[in-house]
Image (tube, rainbow, N blue to C red; front, side, top):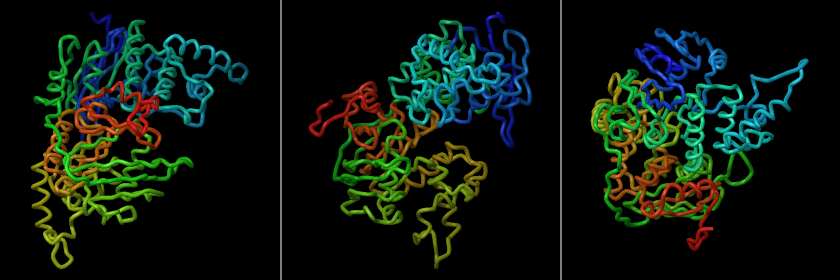
Length: 513
């Protein structure tokens, strides 16, 4: 029954230099369904949706709406066809108000004057109807990420879009906000709107979608009814092999204190108050301590203050019994491995080869140099050993330029380099950000193995599944302070979410308020 398909993307091929991002993909969206698009990193999900929204033009294939072939040259054409998109990185103007952002590009005017009164009434009616309450007069820069997402959704509804594309919509939300978004999506589907939902979070796909289409390496693998499948089958389709979804680890055996922070303060560049405000905690050998929180609550600055990338303004950092509060980055790295948040800015020299990147912190060791000159044979041999051990895939092996590698393999290279240095403390900041289930399974296994060798691991993560699965202790950070400490076996994501959003905090005695 072709009539029930509101959108058909038939045999779509999209190429970029050296890569076929979408290779003869067919996707059919029914009226009133939530259709999930699942795949590994670089599988071509966002590219396919960008073709539907008019951001890219395909090399081959056709798009049909209600059985009629259509040409979508740009997002204005998509909007005219009733197609709207909430992008992974929101497209909002921060200094404009919420209302101005919603009506921008779709303003009603009479005699050259904006008719904001009518627009306000329409937006208020929509927000009332769908439970998307926002302050229309607030500036976007002053509202939370969850609220910004509501603004993006109201933008689509204001334009009367019937086909809604959500690209990784839950990446920056608390568990409560995710629950609200899922309920809103179901409400849209009930009313006959059709939703395309890009995600690699299997829990959400199982909860909210009617059907799932899986892409792998730019190719179409298959479409299944959600009710007839499970997380394990989907992950196997997505990666092409069986994947362990649960982290395999025994109980921790914490030993000596390796890292001790006392009243650490790090100033903020964005505003006058401290980004890290009198933070104190310890990390022991043989345990994984996780800092959880919504992005932008001081986690980045905490790691910068600890690793020496930013100067602290107060308090102390003690590593292996030595006060390193004012030590150089090189001195700190003698006892610390750092998997950084931004792999391009702080993790790699992108125009160096893979082998050069793998010895970045060790080139001055006797095994890699003689008389001040780098021993290229030793460097290559070492690189080949790590590439094999950590399954780092690259076109030309050790001599591949780092910039040309996929994000997942760049991340594996950094992890290989840092873990092989065998330092007492590992600081891992979002080590699996943007990676698919296969790569995540491998990296989690490596971090648990390091813990079991007696290393102290400080993990910073925004992914609650990762926080709950991997950590032995959880510290929640909100507005630069540690507001709670939890045992992952005795808490759940709902409780963590309340602390992450600032709705609750623990006082010094461990009492919740």
